[in-house]
Image 1 (spheres, helix red, strand yellow):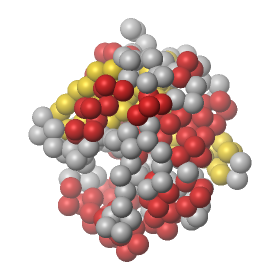
Image 2 (cartoon, rainbow, N blue to C red):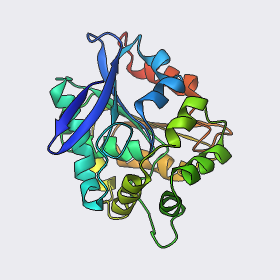
Image 3 (cartoon, helix red, strand yellow):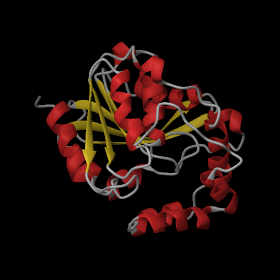
Length: 254
């Protein structure tokens, strides 16, 4: 499996589809992996239209998992994505992030807005609001991987492979990431410099629904889509809907 080196961090990535197609970089939510994009059906809907590159930023999957919170400053997380893009010489890529991945994608893109063809950002907020004294995510990470899996199992019908991966995540690393996220800067003002098209989406019942919809006002060229009845978690396996929208707006034949 391929890796790139970003200072002292090895960042794992996987590629799919024809390298002559438009490059599309994928970054999923906290604790998720490249295999989740496959198992939830995204790759089958995208690889015919795009040169797809899934990235596992530090702390995730088979990438290096530091356990000190300073390693997870937002610029460092974004630099993992930039290093993959630069190493693979991806010209004018699209970047798609969901949840935590959306913040990382946006943080990377606003560093050099002219270098990106567009963004797809789902289920996120422009400013992470994490109160570590009461944060359920950090508390669950402190209880270990089985506790984290149990949270997911309450939210939707987690596929078997994904459940196996969630049961072995490095919760010490993810707790450090969550601790760092509490200090991440807001991205609203920086978003105004990103003039390429932005597709925003969320489930109707997502806890970030209002924040995602409101983010439209921060981009010069953005539209928002909403999936009725879905929450933050059960929107993820509803992949055919959003991949269809992405292909329609950004596909190689466009």
